[in-house]
Amino acid sequence: MFSTGAPRVHNLFRRGERNMRNVISATLLGLTLAVTAHTSAAQELKIGANDSVQSVLVAQKGKRVTVRVRSGQEFTGIMRDATGKLVQLGAISGREFFDAVVPLEAIDAVLVRTKQ
Image (tube, rainbow, N blue to C red; front, side, top):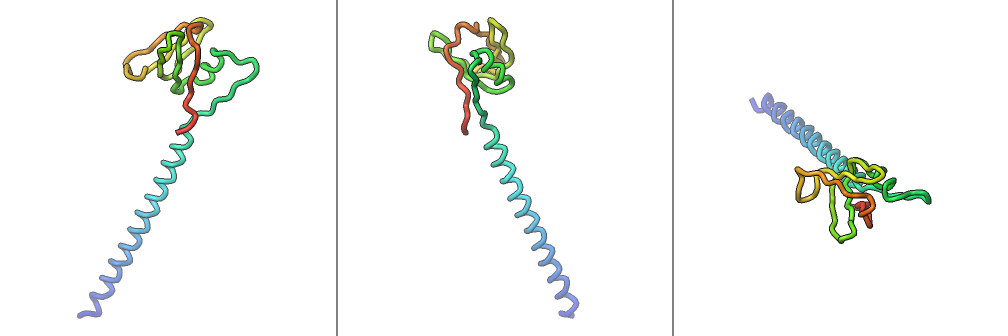
């Protein structure tokens, strides 16, 4: 009677070991992907000799930037578009349902987060 039950218990333990290995493998894979995604989220900022504020902003299109205007006020949002005269930022921090249009000539600085 004990001999027929022992293989079943043994198989349950083996099944549990396999499940635990699968859980550990999946967890390690998830952590690896999360760390990779987190480190790749940082943006790189490169400028050239002929760049302007407009070209730097256009290069950041679709990414989160901060522009500092002459008054010292800062606007942080997603870079939507830049023309010869205007810059459009979307999802403004603190006012996520709003976009902002800033005159290009009023921008003193463009801040881009490069590290997490």
